[in-house]
Image (cartoon, rainbow, N blue to C red):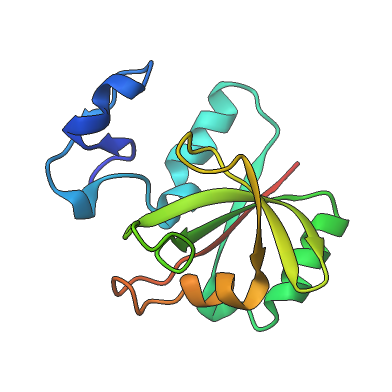
Length: 147
């Protein structure tokens, strides 16, 4: 895939910043692998942001609940990449949200999309399922931000 920040023509006017446009839905958006590569590291360095990212694909995480608990306990920010269809039947695409809390078998997601609730709860097992490759052939996962 090409550069990050690819959007579909229908949403181009919803962004303040000019982004690359694609007509191919499979190329739109940001890919999980892009959040662990040099571009993001160079962006943090350029703007003197003391952040580091590490990408973990769901097939590499043996205990999802433990993974989330451990990182939240360390005050790490966790962004999750998942498929929306298990949560919104009319959506058939990948998405990113921040995990803001865990309570038993539920997590609270902070969602940046204006079309979704700002905060909503999801079952951890359902989230893990939504990160599998059965939807489009790609594993999804977590991005852990550390200082």
